[in-house]
Length: 144
Ligand code: CA2
Image 1 (cartoon, rainbow, N blue to C red):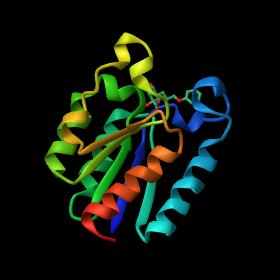
Image 2: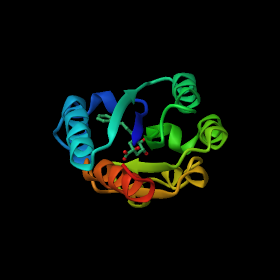
Image 3: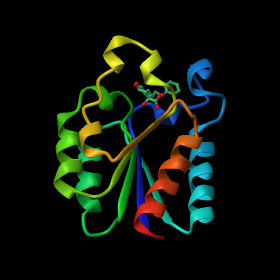
Image 4: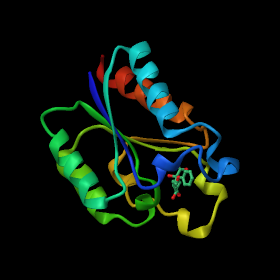
């Protein structure tokens, strides 16, 4: 199974700022963690990060016909982006939403997820482990 993992804006800053919310580990540590989870499940995983909404839309479109599933942490675009929702709906691949923090316990503007209607599951507040859960879910549902 081929899974595309997409991370949105500022997640490349992991470990450099706001460790009380997002932890001490860096973005490179997150990529290593995701690749280890991929090895455990037998999935082939590509990890992509962008600070630009249009690049994320294009990456989702390019997954059509190539990937079997998408794991996405759209970061702040979670709460604003109809374009990412539409792209996920357009490719109609099984998708899982992930957040490092528990957004339900944060500001009011984080309570809306525009992309959730296009996702089968949401994992939040589990730190890096949410990505592993998402990969396990996709491989469990749709094979390796
Ligand atoms: O909890 C999550 O994973 C979020 O998607 C992270 C986003 C935030 O806008 C969402 O509401 C919840 C922010 C990512 C910013 O990441 C940083 C990491 C280190 C330092 C600064 C920002």
